[in-house]
Image (tube, rainbow, N blue to C red; front, side, top):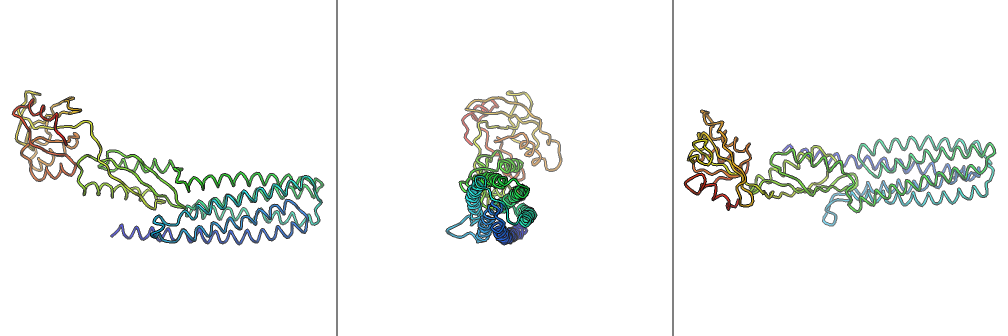
Length: 414
C-alpha cells in the first residue's frame, strides 16, 4: 500500500515539475519577445549595429524558449502504445532546436558586426541606445537566474540550457553596452568588434548545447556518477553476488536504467524476484530522477563449490562422519574446483551446546562460512528453511568414510 502511495506521489511530483518548467519557458518567451522588439526599434532609430545584432539574438531566443515550452508540454503526455517510454525526449529535441537557433543567430550577428567594422556609422540617439543596453543586461540577468533556479529544481536540461543562453545574453548585452559607449565617445568601429565577440560567444554555446542534446538522443552514457551510485547501492543489497551491464540513459529530465544482477546459482524464482524488488526499491529511493529501471537476474557461475560434512572428531581425513546436524561437534569443510579438491579444514560447531534453536544457529554458522552444499541426513524443518533462504543445498553423503565422501563430491553437479 505504501509503495502504491509513493508511486502516486512521484507521478504527481513529476507532473508538477513539468508544469512549472512549462510556465518558466512561457515567461522566458514573452520576456525575450519584449526585449527583441525594444532593442530592434531603438537599434534602428539610433543606428546601432550592436543593438540591432543583439535584437536579432533576442529574437532567436523567442524560438528557443518556445521550443522549450513545446518540449515540456509534450513531455507531460502519458506513455502510449507508440511511445512506451513516454515523450520526455521531446524536451531534448527542444534543446537541439535551441542549439541550431543559437548557431544561426550567432552567424547572423557575426555578419552584421563585420559590416559595422568595415563601414561604421555614428549613433543618432546614443543615450537611448545606452539605456536600452543597460535594460537588456538587467532583464537578461534576472531571467537567467529565474530559469536556472527552476531548471535545477525540476532537473530540466532544456530549461537549464535556456538559462545558460540567457546568461550569455547578459555578457552579450554588456559587450553591446561597451560598444555603444565607445561609439558615443568617438570609437565608432568598437560597436562592430563588440558584436563580433558576442557572435563568437553565441556560436560556442550553440555547439556545446547541440553536442549534449545529440548525445542524449543517441542514448550515450553521459552520467558516470549515477552509474557508479547505482553499482554501490546494488552491491550493498543482501543476496547480490555481483552486477554488470549497468546502463543509464537520459530522456528529457528523467533517467532510464537497466542492469544485470548476479545471484547464487539455483536461486528460487521467489527469492530472485524478492532480491530484484529490493534492488529496485533501494535505487528508486536514492536516485529520484529515475523513471524506469529494468532489472535482469542472472545466476552467478561458481568456479569453486564449498561442501560441509558433519563429523564426530577433529582428526581431519580420519574423522568419522556423523548423522547428526545441530548437535554435531565438528564440520569438515572443503572446496572443489574443476573436479579437484583444493583445500579442507575442520571447524568446531559453535551451536552444539545450545539448548534452543541449535539447528538454526548451526545453519547460520554454515551460511557465514559460505557453504554451498551440506552433506547430511538429519536436518530439521527450521535448519532446512534457513539454508534454503540462503540458497544452501543439502544432499545425502555417498560413501562410508570421509575420504570416500569427499572423493564422490568431485563430480557432483549443483
